[in-house]
Amino acid sequence: MPTPSSDKANIPLKQNPHKIRERRENNLELAIGHEVRTQRKRQRLTVNDLSEKTGISAGMLSKIENGVTSPSLTTLQTLTKALGVPLVSFFAGYDEPRGVMHVKAGEGAEVQRSGTRAGHQYNLLGHIGANNSGVVVEPYLITLSEDSDVFPAFQHEGIETIYMLDGVVDYRHGDKLFRLEPGDSLFFDADAVHGPEGLVTLPIRYLSVISYPQNS
Image 1 (cartoon, rainbow, N blue to C red):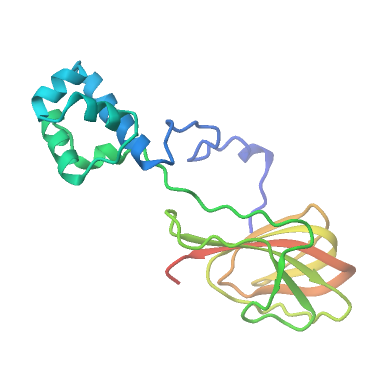
Image 2 (cartoon, rainbow, N blue to C red):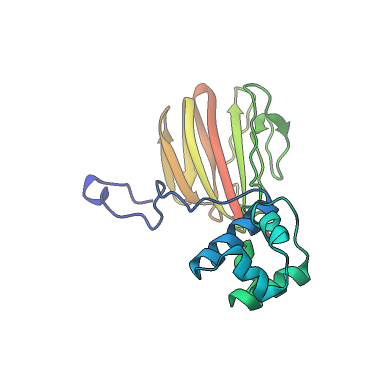
C-alpha cells in the first residue's frame, strides 16, 4: 500500500470533522414544534394569523410549537397547506438516537469470528449494525501468544484497519509483508489475503476495526 508522505499531508478531506450541525431534537414533538414555529415566523405570521388560516385554535398551536402535544397527521397536513411547505419539513429537525457502546477495560466479549484460528483471541469491543450510514463496524482487540497459529490467508469482505499495541508481528497483505510494531497501523482492502505470517515478539496485541456493507 502507498505510504503517506509529507507532500500529501495537506490533501483536503471530503468531510469536515469539526463542522457543527444545525441543532436537532431527540424528542419528536419538540422537533415538530420548532419547525412549525420557524416556518410561521419565516412568513411573518402570528399565532392568531395561523389560527385563522387553519381553523386550529391559538391554544392548540401554542401547545404544538412548544412540543407539549403530538399533532395528528390531519393537523400536520392542514399546517402544510397553510404554510405552503412539504410535510417532511416538519421532521427536518428530528435526530433519531444514534448507536453507542461503552465497553470497560477487560469486559470486551470474547468471540469466535468466522475463520478464527487456534490461539487467536478476539475480544469484540462493540458492534453497530443497522444505521443510516449503511455500514457495519466491528472493532476487535486481538491477542496472539505462543499458542497462536500463523495464518496469512484470511480473506473477507470490507475494509480493515489494524493498530499495533504490543509486540511485533510480520503481517502479510497480498504479496507484501509488513513488520508492525507498537504504534504502527495498517489500513487495507480485506478482500485480499492477509494475516499474521511471523510472530516476532510475543505477546502481540492489536486493534482490528472491520467495516463492511450492512446488507452483506
